[in-house]
Length: 566
Image 1 (spheres, rainbow, N blue to C red):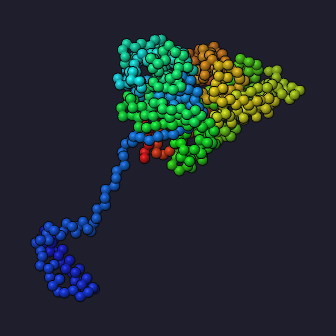
Image 2: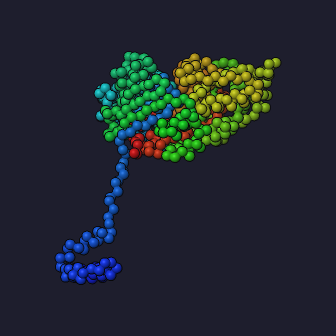
Image 3: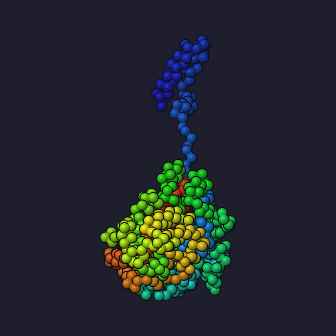
């Protein structure tokens, strides 16, 4: 160490002499002290010099490594919901009710189940008994525990009776037992392959028995101002015509969730308004089904915005225009087939969807494992349509018209309205007089599903999470005045029998063969015009994490694990 100090002092001396020769003349005695000092410098000089030569930068502030708490997410909805009871299965209701009412299970994007209200479950070897164990800490917002009796009541009195798919999804349930407060047992009458994928909020929401028992479940005050709920957020306000606000449920029973403080749902029926609001920073999220296909490329170029194409894996859908088979001329299968030949689906895909999707020949679209490419539909052939209508007894009259009809749709659903316009033009070209009949949501669903007052009407219906899902709108057992049921009035006992068989088969290849037969028979009977399976895009700020929250349209899943990176 002493040798190092000596060398260091010699360097200092040389530098001092050089400085002296360049500057003012310095008295000789000023040089002497630096040469005489040796031992005291061993401790006091060496270390400070190293610090001055290589200064240390102040440490960088570390970013949070995990989810952050707090913040508000503002998202758009297509229209104001009629109420907040999820039994109506409407997108605009489900967006909000998915944060209020729990279900037994949540799902990953690959449709594997994960715990929610049920913390664990068991399935018997014969596949006929499903036992679910509820979270011990689960409570409603009024402090009442969520029990197996709530689950039993919800299925027996709410879901199976009033949910549009409840009857078709759970007809195989023979009994539901609640041996204790936190155990619920489903016993099936037959093997039912899709059972586990239908226990989501969209298909099987759970309600507080002590609030709904003995009331009309569709008119209960809790639907309009939900005070007793059990999801990650609670109702705060509903400003008619503008928005609904939910805030964090401080009693939520899932550990450390949710992350967000607040979610605001803004009613925005005009598609272009949603995109402009996103760009202006007024909203943070446009969910799947709400982003118009015409704006996808523009949104793709927006700075700080993520264009998502996942989050609808559970709802592989086809935009469909059903015909009312109860009334002439649509009760004639030859007329329905002729109309099917008149629709230019390729043009619809290009003009309406900007090629963001696939033409679907029937109700099971190409992305589904049950899709059979060998089953073909109707090519665009207006000449064939003319001949078939002549043969069916609908020639062109003296007024230049074969017959008149209406197409009913919701104008706030972009693909419905634009597709309806194309179909109307196609039909006018073969001398069918078509009147477009747009109806807002509140009028549309009663007219189509309860009064059956329509000729042709639009619906987006899916072959997911399981192809059995299409039975809800084509099985004759589900002809009833309830939203999203068999609204066309289509009846074919052979198709019914195939649906009933397919849901009990466990081998996927065998099931695929059965659904291939179903698709072929439906196409032959043509109760509907199947147009396009759309790719459902969403758009959200890059600061949002945990997106999409699940596979049920990315909206009917709880937002308890969504967070904002500040």
